[in-house]
Length: 175
Image (cartoon, rainbow, N blue to C red; front, side):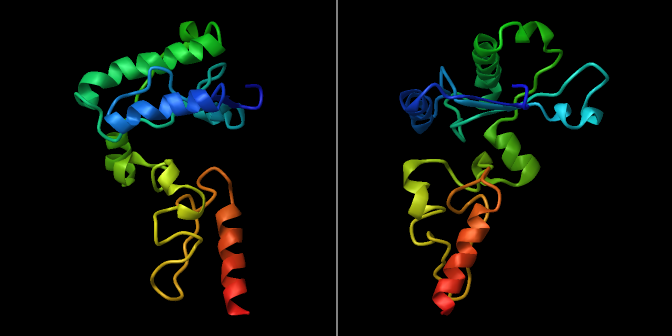
């Protein structure tokens, strides 16, 4: 965490177990988490001696069974409990916590389904199938229109890779 990033994903079985409930409109009891502390590199984000932590819980269902208003607080508490297990003493230092649900992300940032990777991180939307069947490998049904960005392989968080891959595709087709 000294570098400002923590990923909680104990293994492939834990990742599958975290994803599975979302298929049924449920929140994972053990969510896969990615936490960053941007105030480590930009102290202006928090008061002196304090920090800001942003945590992404992967695979939250777009529509939670029973609704996010009812189930959101319990999911937030579950996320904090998982973090506490990996960062003992963290909960005593948390002054405030806010949960942004997929619906919140959609409303605030215009991301359909709250998918900040421009699509669900599911097997049928990964690798050569990203972002969707028929528009993978950086091409589209529209001649001359190519895709790159978080919605293209390898997805968000791998800066520039989708653009490089799309450029290579364009150059290969042009030669």
